[in-house]
Image (cartoon, rainbow, N blue to C red):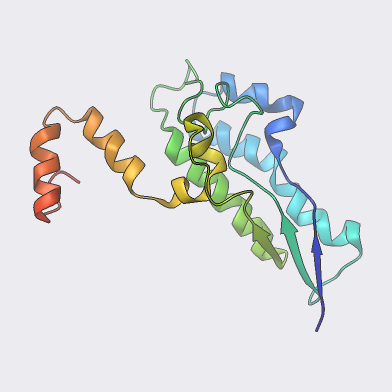
Length: 166
């Protein structure tokens, strides 16, 4: 069996429609935007390349970013919070975006390669461009502790191994 590994990028962050993320008000609107901007890429790629299943295909470079400017992206953790979306949680949106891309690619029989494993110092890029930071439980724990009224007691319970406030 042979492989086709193509350096084809699927980044919606340069799509001119990403401005729509700033006006969304709920998860359904977000899901519709992801469906519209990202998922057709994976569904149509094999036909466009004339590589039908079961031929092996890998797609390089994708991310979890929803804007080329991370300070405007709703999935960066340092970007915008849509004013009409009261229950906004950037990590849930980012995780949904990644999961949706993987499901669409898997359904099309396409292996995926994330943009980069680790971004050391660029904090505003880590939330959506650094796989290590996306998969790590520590950023989630830090944010949980920052928003908890009993952060010190919570941290102590976690260090003792009781799981405490998580």
